[in-house]
Image (cartoon, rainbow, N blue to C red; front, side, top):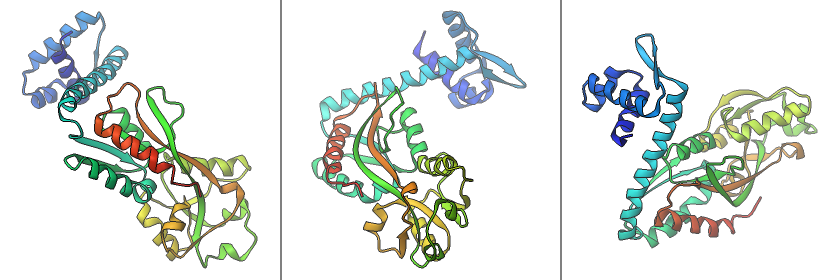
Amino acid sequence: MDFRDLKYFEVIATEGSLARAAERLHRTQPALSKCIDRLEEALDAKLFEKDGRGMRLTAAGQVLVKRTRQMAIMVEETAQEMQDHAGGLRGHLRIGCLPTLAEHMLPAVLGTLLADAPGITISLMVTMNDNLLAGLHDGELDLVVGPMLDNDPDIVCEQIAEDTVVVLASENHPVFDAPITLAGLLAWRWMLPATTVASRQWLDQTFERHGLARPTVQLESNVLNTILPILEKTELLGFVTRFNLVARRARVREVELPETLMKRRLGLAYRKNGYLSPVAARIAAILREQGKDLLSL
């Protein structure tokens, strides 16, 4: 197999159309058809089947496109490794980070890193754990700082810190006027992250384990900076890390209930067979050291 054929195949698979792929690659459709023919002959497998006016991958095609993307990442990382051997602490670093850690941990970490390597550039993606994991798998991120990933064979994850996620409400919320129970929390509407986020899943499952309905979500948001101001001004309940109670002077209180305390392990993750540049290795070391001082609350 020719690597150029594989690159063309990936574009064809992504576009689902020879015409669109030809336009994107600045090649003719017959040339791309021959590319597919060569691959199918080499693999002795059909890669595409007709889908209306377009085309879709067969089962064999789905396997090949996954492998092709993995090879593309490997080629890119090999080129980067060769440059890093010559350049040392230089280059570009792509970091994904959970909002909590981006606010409470990453500033000090990046301060140390930039002092050690002033010539580097950094792309920082601050988002929730589902997007972080997808970016790491797709080779769009070099490192991820977020919840521990225990069951992914393609990812290495090492614990660097802990935090506790709790229910929060405005300091004058009526929920504090009566004894607090898990069932009683269902009388109020909530502001929670998307259902794909681990903390939301944990909270929903907690209510279900006790034979209760899931919380009624009136406002769904993954933007950390908006959560506390909204909780201050409304009667919504939220589910947020305790770090916010320490670092911010928000007029919110913890709704204390043992059943809703979520202990969360926070980790540093990277691809198992991926390449860690000297810069990535350096920030990993800084994160490990800084994590020792980030006490569980």
